[in-house]
Length: 550
View 1 (cartoon, rainbow, N blue to C red):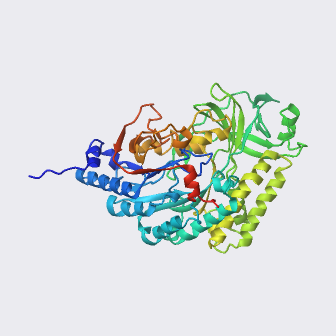
View 2 (cartoon, rainbow, N blue to C red; view 1 turned 30 degrees about the vertical axis):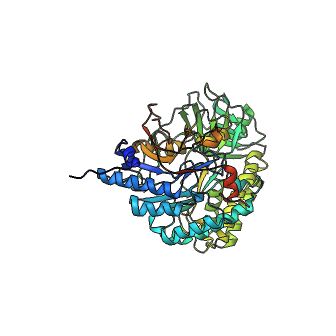
View 3 (tube, rainbow, N blue to C red; view 1 turned 90 degrees about the vertical axis):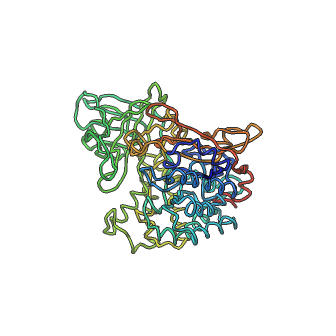
């Protein structure tokens, strides 16, 4: 009889439960992100702690040996993307210099595929450029999906910090798209496979919310928005709830909502004459008027109202959400979540006789210019009725759409990809997770609490995440011999005094080690003996560790 001598890492891994291996989802070789996006959902720190090549190799072999000894397969116990690991959570994996080694270990040692989500990488870094070229050439078969994230909060996109510029960011995004194009085409374009995901800044207005009855009609007014019940009555608006998700994973509501007239005007005030004139179609001030279905929802912060909270049948999205002040929510206001870019794309396709889901193979650069011109024209129209929305279009929507267009064309992609619902994915405004909470200016009192119907569908109690069960992540922890601010280490990662690996169970709804529905803490283990290096933010910037660095 022979007795296996376990390595120190294997001895430590022997204490973790089977599901730490079979339900492993986030195997992140790095924590921290130089981009420091203001909307970071995971509170990423500014300094980097990452596995060295040796540390990554040692850990991967130990995990594989432990799984084999137990007769288990890494990640195969999950409902969501079984057998696929995510090398990111509170980091940007596109700037990890050993990602090609990670891919090799994933395929040849762990027996898993991987998914990549990144804002891109610096084309001025010879090391990163060569590494990504190797990934595309040699490890394409290990990728389950690749997503390039375009947001207005990345350091390079903002372009105001020393050594950054938006033009360089656009060039870097174009370079990344060109580098990965053979692989993206091979995987197949789609939101779940290969795409550019655009997440826009929110349009938030903090203002008094009037909830009253005028001329017998229920009226809500906040900022430039006036909602008037089409029928008179004094009964309170009923609550709406999600009954279930349909076969397309879209929310099915328990009622159709109540018919209201949505008036948008910077000059209309909630008064009896305004209500009469609006309902009769003779309102004299500059305005728009649209028939909507109004719903009353509630979340942990209190009640809120939502007009047309989901997609229209023609694919447009124009949801308006009104938030009254409450015991938790100390201010009132609105979020206008209209997807202007999506609307302009759909309108242009319709003008060309195409349906919203139809490809546009004959698109030209002139068609792209026409969409951008339509967005400028929309902003000009809104100047007379909603100056805040006009400014938002010019300051947030148009710059994002322009960068995306320039990057695609510079990378040599056909203009059809700009119009492709499978490649250009407008996901709307950022969501209330992580640092993004502050961008809602008090309307989101509880971090991670869904504040729209789409967020509830995405990560709330009605989402698919609730039936997936807990998942696990493995990642290096910040280690330091001197105190560091939480902004450097990140809020997800407790700092340690020596190189340490964290193995923790997480609720998939909010990616935290506590079940949101019950408040119960989840399991956590640590390993030592894995080589981890610390890269301060200043050094990472010097190393051109992010797109947009000059």
